[in-house]
Amino acid sequence: MNQAEPDTKTRLLDAAETLFAERGFAATSLRAITAAAQVNLAAVNYHFRSKQALLEAVFARRLGPINRRRLELLASAQARAGRRAPPLEEILEAFIGPAFRLRAELAGSGTSFQRLMGRLFSEPGEHVQAILKPQFAEVAAGFLPALERALPRLPGAELAARIHFMVGAMAHTLAGTHVMQLFVGDRCDPSDAEGTIRRLVSFLAAGLRAPLPSRRRPRSTRS
Amino acid sequence: MNQAEPDTKTRLLDAAETLFAERGFAATSLRAITAAAQVNLAAVNYHFRSKQALLEAVFARRLGPINRRRLELLASAQARAGRRAPPLEEILEAFIGPAFRLRAELAGSGTSFQRLMGRLFSEPGEHVQAILKPQFAEVAAGFLPALERALPRLPGAELAARIHFMVGAMAHTLAGTHVMQLFVGDRCDPSDAEGTIRRLVSFLAAGLRAPLPSRRRPRSTRS
DNA sequence: GTCTATATGGGGATAGAC
DNA sequence: GTCTATCCCCATATAGAC
Figure (cartoon, rainbow over the protein chains, first blue to last red):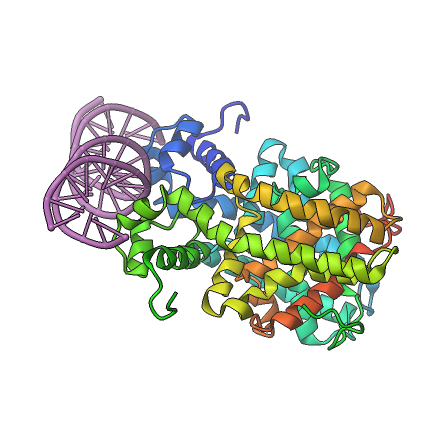
């Protein structure tokens, strides 16, 4: 429990989290992880069964608390709203906030897990998907009805597409993009979690409330 | 030039495009690629120099035309608008459309490249970033001023953040997410490119025009 | 241009001493 | 729980015959 010298298992989790986030799962060798953790190579297969199981453990450690916090915040927003639907902004804040506040709460390693989580959404591979499915099924069951109530006039297919966009914006921001430095320069401060959350909530709320797209664009812009 | 039997180089590009999109770069072996292309293993190092160079060739083949089309569409929108700024929706359509119309234009392999491009935005690794930088610098130079003119009252830092969100939504949609099937079921038809473009433009235009987030939320939602 | 064969290194996983 | 040593497979890349 001494923070100066965590035990082997924790050191492995920390190192794996960082390296998986930086290089991706397939490109990270167990040798690199054990070297970074200053642990023997065989320790991975003793404490975890395999590289795959190590990845699962990395996620299990963080994702549970995040999703619990999400549902807590949603529940308290619903309690405040009484019988009516909570405001869209509060629903979004409940979903987004816990993920982005990791960095502040965990100091060093919060950043890595944010990046890892962001990347994972667009990562292929069935093992990865298998990790996330049960975790997200629970939050989906809570947030989907809330969003439907907050946006009662939005058709289901449209809501589905917009949730898709929303997750994309969030995941990309969590991943801490690289390419976009070209567009935006360094005017974004990624360590300003509260500012990022406010901006994201404002952007997404407006997008989710957007008027339905017309079936044909008003002015002909044929490609 | 016979489409029934493309030459070895093209077969390799096609197979690499598909497999990189499905499994990621590091997780795809040259053996898998040559097997899928029904080509000898050594052909990769004859036609391209290395695995890395093969990836670059896969991108060079598609990204150039897409970005050229983007700038053409932007230019024609600007021509229609005369001295005024083109409508935001037309700018977005010019940026988004060409990427999503790949699928229709290329039949089979368009889908793979869309997925690959979407994933690449959040992928780490300097080689990958090095591929995209020069390509995107050009489109950024065209679109950034156009967006600034279309959103004259938006502060620069805010615009930067929102472009970030925009790219995330687009990349995630291109990647053809997996996890989100839980949220949305199968109510999204990914083959409906025009529908997706319309929805994305509508969502993003509203998000980009969103009111500035207040520095403190009106109602206290402390975490 | 295309093949076989191989060089060379790194990967995950494990056995068994301590 | 931790270490050394090693098994065994697969990776990229190349050499050289055809």
